[in-house]
Amino acid sequence: MFDYLLPNVFKKLGLILFISSFILVLFAGEMGFDAIKRDNAITITALIGFSLLINSKEIIEDERTMLCRYKALGKTCRFLILLFLAMKLITILILQSNTQTSISLFAFLGGLTYLINFEKLIGNKL
Image 1 (cartoon, rainbow, N blue to C red):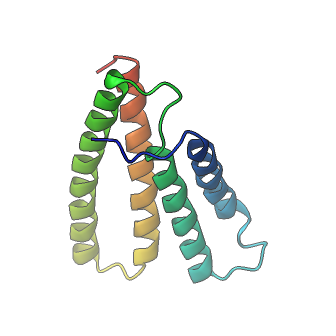
Image 2: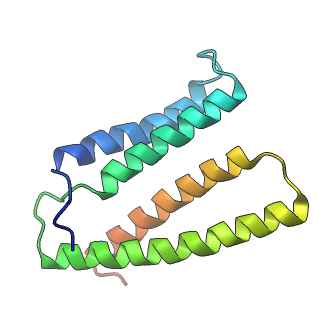
Image 3: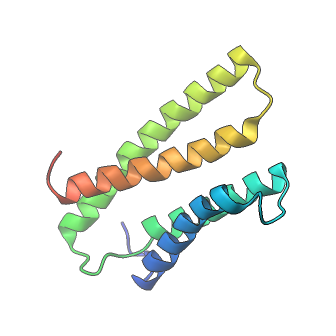
């Protein structure tokens, strides 16, 4: 199922990009970005970093790691579907016009959910 994973080097690159999105949160205003460009840069950097992170092989990739990756992706997908529906419902009910913040929150929570689930499955805590 995971024959198309990237080499392990991309995991480090993805982690650097994912962490740099948090640095952008802190320092993007001082770098001269306006609000829309800042939110777009943070979202794009976080999504590319997270995509590289989850699509990269582990150092030792065996059947157990693949099963844990599959279960973590499944739980993350279910969580993100529920989160997406809840955010759309909240947006409709409150008529919030700032959707970019909700997309950034969606991307951050998705990445966090995947990493927590994967680490628990690797550690056999679930």
